[in-house]
Length: 105
Image 1 (cartoon, rainbow, N blue to C red):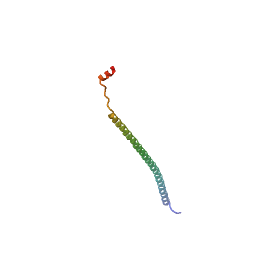
Image 2: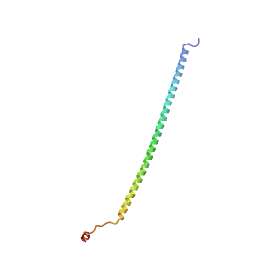
Image 3: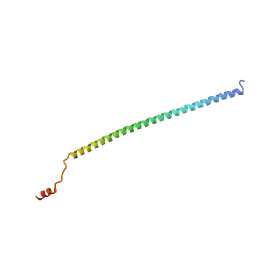
Image 4: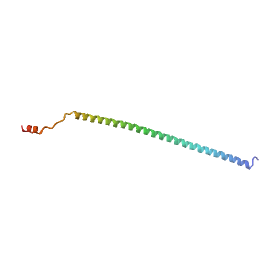
């Protein structure tokens, strides 16, 4: 008969160590897989957030341009009206004596 009780214990310890190493490797691989999925999801979220921020910045710039154009048009219209008003001859009220003399005739 080969080996004694001590040899059996060594083989059992080696098997246990190999099993523990295999379990640890599987757990590490599983954890790395979960981490990779989390990283992908996070990257997708960051890209979506950047896309939304860019769209908002573009919309804000467009609306700002429209607002500035509207304000410029309103300013130009106000200036034209002021110029027209200044160019009009001012009406003077008829003197009361003249008004009554035309009514009497």
